[in-house]
Image (cartoon, rainbow, N blue to C red; front, side, top):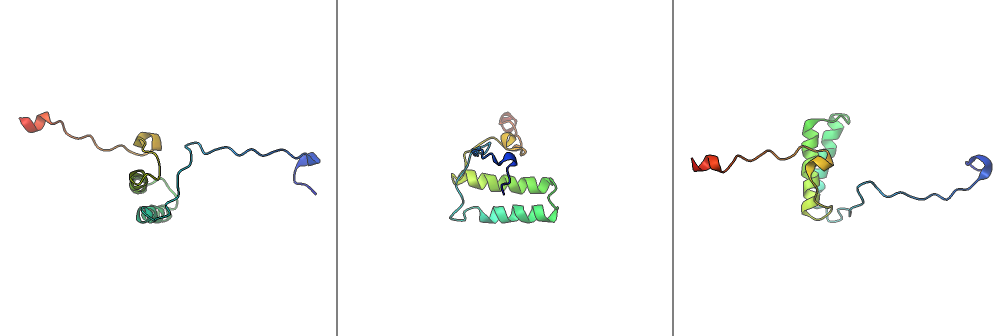
Length: 93
């Protein structure tokens, strides 16, 4: 018996991920950050907590630094941007 109604076999065509794929961290360069993030998510029971978002940012930054994913702006990744640096003109005064 077939799970398809009418026994029609349709070819399944996989769709690529929205943001593409990136290499696995075979060398464990970002394992520490990943474990801290996963532990945070477990503690807050999967809620979107600000402290977990910062840990996610650290993890993704590690991946970008080790060329495990393309560098992208934080706003495109759904994370807060870096705080603005003070103007250098204030130091000259």
